[in-house]
Image (cartoon, rainbow, N blue to C red; front, side, top):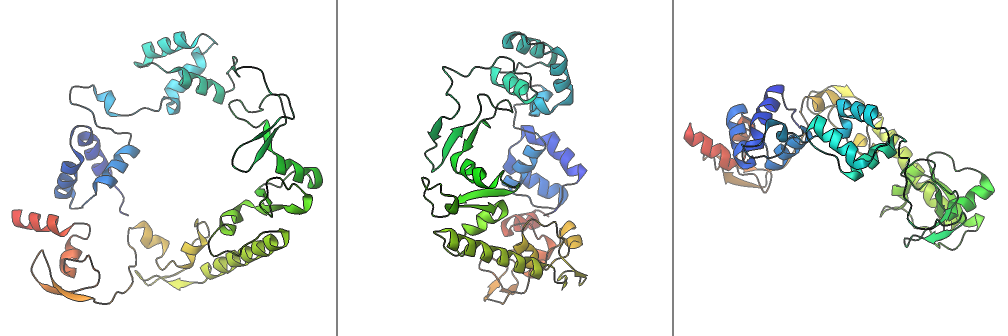
Amino acid sequence: MRRWTEEQEAWLRERYPYERTRVLCRHFAWRFGRQVSEEAMAQKASGLGLRKVPRDLPDRAARTVRWSSEPEMDAWMGEHDEGQSLMSLSAAFAERFGFPLARQQICAWRSARGRQTKRSYGGALAPVGTERDTGKGYVLVKVAERPEVPGTKDNWRAKHVLAWEAVHGPVPEGYDVLRADGDPANLSPDNLVAVPHRMIARLNSRDAPEWHDRESLEAALAWCELNAAIATAEASVPRTCQVCGKTFVPPAESRFARGRRCAVTCPECVARGRKARGTRSVKETRVCKVCGKRFGATQSNQWRCPECIAAAPKWSWRLQKSLRKER
C-alpha cells in the first residue's frame, strides 16, 4: 500500500468536500499518475475528517469534529461544568463553539470523567445476589449495589466465574473460564477450566480437536499450544527477501504468527510499498487491450501486457487506454 504524500492530502482536503468521488479519482490519476479506487479515497477522506458539503456552507462544515477529542473544547467543559442543567450547559457551549451538545453527549462526558452526579437507574434496584439469564448461555449475578466505574455494569459478574473463584481464587489476568461440557447449568469445579484468552479463537477454529469434557478440553488446549509454538518457531527461521535479496527474520511484534511464518518480504521493502508477488505460470496467450501486443497472461483477469502494467501498475486497462488516446 503506497502512502499519501502531504501534497496529495492537501489536494484532497481542497477538493473532496465539493466534488464527486468518481471524478476526483480520475483527476487524481491525471495529477499524480496513480490510480485510487473510490473506496480508498473515501476511506482516506474519512481518516482526515472530511465529508461532502455544498458550496454554500461555511468552511468549518467541511470537517467533522469529535468535540470530546478536541483539547480546547474538553478544557472548556472542565472549566465551565459546575453541575448546572444540561440545557444551560449546552446553550453555553453553543455560544462559545457554534453548535450545541445533545443530552447524551454531556452525560457521556461527565460519566467518563466521574462528574455524573445525578444518575437515573429507573425504578427499584435489584438486591445484591440477584441472578439474571442473558439468553446467550450465561447467568449473571449482582455482586454490588452500584458499579465501581460509572457508566459500566461491573457490579454484575458471570456465575460460572464466581464458582471457579470460590475454589481457586481470582482468575489470573489474561484467562477466561470455560465450561468443559458446554452446559450452562453445570457449575461443578471439575467442569470449569481456566483457559488463556489468546487460545479461545484457536479452540473454536474448524481444524481444532473437538472437546466435550475436561479431559478433551485440556487435550485440545495442549494441541493449540503446540500448534502456536510450531508457528512461532517457523516464523523465527531466517529467510531471503524475494524483492531485495536481503536475509531477514520477521519481526516478533507482528500480530499473527501465521503471517510471520509465510512472510517472504522484509519489513524495509514492505515499508516502501514493495511486495514479492511470487511466480505464476502462463495460462493463455492474449492481446493487450492497451497497446495491442500479444503476451502470456498469468491471471484470468489480466488484460494488459507486462510493459503496460509496469508503466501504470495501479490503473485499469480502460483508464490507461483512454489516457493514452488523449495524449
